[in-house]
Image 1 (tube, rainbow over the protein chains, first blue to last red):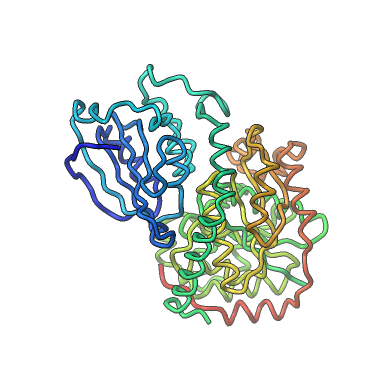
Image 2: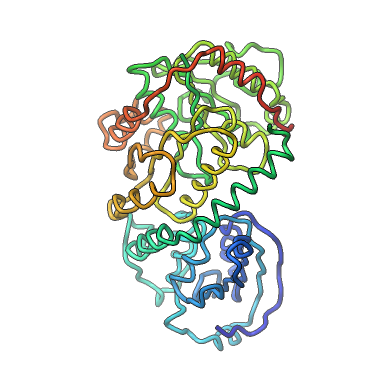
Length: 186
Length: 255
């Protein structure tokens, strides 16, 4: 995925990947967000995700750790925080040069559902999506029109990824042990 | 006898408070149940249990010299200890007193349910999980909720707390939940206690300020919570031992 270099708006560490998605929607960001999950250190991979946005709505997603794009990239990126996050603004024509590559395209609300687990944010994002990016398939009521079958497939793929789950468990154990010392637990 | 359970999930919005009150009410058929809002920074049990107008809450007990008896309310067959929602109340609370308060409550009940914070990033957030005998993990069939649930389990077991089981909450019909629960159980030390369908009944109950089992006892989610409660095999613990453990537990940091 080739993204032109944009103007850096924000670079920080967040616990929850919901934050950059909400900020992007709030600011109607046209540009892209780079997310680097802390787990990539454990998984020993160069894992960074890029999500492009037009007017606050996600368009494309790519994850370097697995070289996958589109919905699978969002599944790969879904890990417990913290994440290092960078938000970049791009001009609309510059964003257009990334092309609308089908293999990288994601439905508008999927990042909020899959990364943030936040149906309300997903619904707000879908409402903001232009008419030509609708319809997504309906799942649960009028507001949630994400692709539920692929969501379910993503959850199953996550549960089948033993290496990733072991990495999450290992990190949590190490964190718990380290904090036990900090917090004075026996 | 008393067994203390932390009802926890690393992630917010999974329905912990609804679950805590539903499991608590279901368990009252057999046990003397006390539920405590241990999410002191983001308390909401009082809204779920019709207690938003009460004068005295856990904040007042932790912030002053009031006895805990003044912040306990007999509602829906349970003893409910709500927490206040004001930031001021939170600031003036002395969380070091929580252990003693919970120790006192443990001396006089069969089942103690601690509605726990949706975070693992401070001593006071983790304290309910540390103090409990077992944790009930509330999950949703989404990747963020599952990975946060895994973290809760690792924290719990690291601190010597077992897993009583999993509650899959807010499940949609087409979530293929059976396959997901089977795969999820491979990674957790406890069984799936129930899968609870997403339902307007839970939201209506919250708006009405009543626990789900009081507001819509015949609803499908209420029945699922009763099944979950029936699958919890409450263990006999000596009340005194639990009380002592609370008293000797770590002191949480100040808010």
